[in-house]
Image 1 (tube, rainbow, N blue to C red):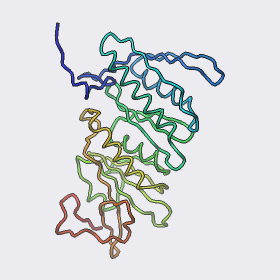
Image 2 (cartoon, helix red, strand yellow):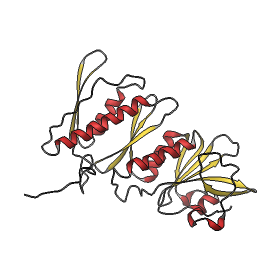
Image 3 (tube, rainbow, N blue to C red):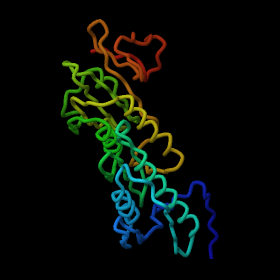
Image 4 (cartoon, rainbow, N blue to C red):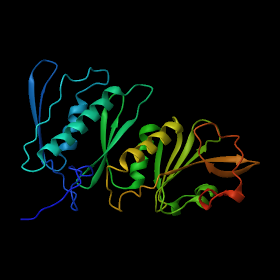
Length: 281
């Protein structure tokens, strides 16, 4: 016999231990539909929690009233109470996100780590989608694509000519977002660089840069203490956001601010840290 000690505050039942096993092996869903008929669904396997969650949320339209009750029962031999509580918390949180989204605040999302893989649950006006996110560029790209309408082109830095200021500003080991206004002032472009400087480019995006920055930062803040990611997934240094601006006819990179920065003078180069130094084209 072996005694194993756990810190229950940090225990992740969906990605447990060194092998990151999901402790939820199957889910039976029992519900009553709008015709007052009782229905049952069964989900089995490592992704059963993801499949059950998507099914539950998909049966709720955004303007629906909250369910009268949601009860979770667990029949595991070990950690029964903890598993039940974690599943109850997850389901309740996702239902709240689904029913509280509004037309003015679309694109809510939640990240969920299951069996060592990260999934993004995206809450939109008409549906709920689930996407597997295998690396940093897919993760931040999925958030951007969900928040902004644009054409996504994933490229390698040696296959595309990036703006000189972006190419010169790229730093390994951090996630970087660069916003660039289009020449016709109809939308903007966005360049996302991951820790290895792989690039995803979005052209002619329409949407709120402030909302994108807020949601990416919110994910970082809410997930940093709850999830433990392998080094192959995401380096959870807080992503850096920049705006490409023209000053005296020359392009510069400056830190992104939530307020208008089109006329903001560049930071004093003599006092900048190396990360925030100015690059000129």
